[in-house]
Image 1: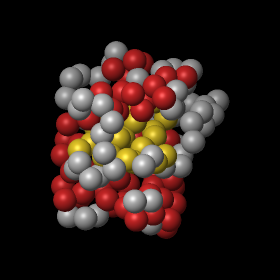
Image 2 (image 1 turned 90 degrees about the vertical axis):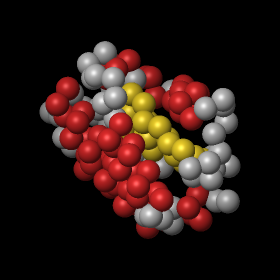
Image 3 (image 1 turned 135 degrees about the vertical axis):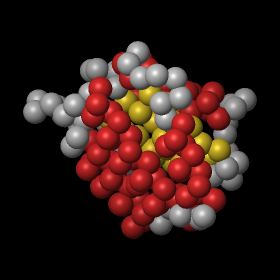
Image 4 (image 1 turned 90 degrees about the horizontal axis):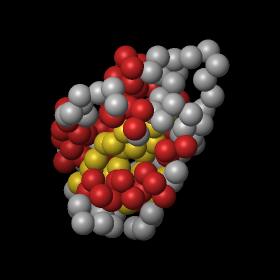
Length: 146
């Protein structure tokens, strides 16, 4: 199934714009990756493998966040890089995951992802506020694999 069957092109543009808007509040970087199935033993292992494959650990402040969605498996994960994990408490993303799952179950993935992205941006701004010298280090486009 191509990405456009799960998230239509206009939805992909909405998500990219949501990332751009959220990143205006923070020096953090937000990425969304969509796949039909987890590739590893569990969703967190799959998210971590994707995080590393996409080299999201290369940001200067180590403050990238990956929102990982395996839509056929109905699983998702949100994971932050070392710079984020050193500052946030355990369970920091749990309510964002719960809200996103709720929207996915209601077959509103674009709305759910845009809402999750906005929340992630707000949360990141507490620890990594926007910086006038900040540059966009990672693409805001949704990445996808079959």
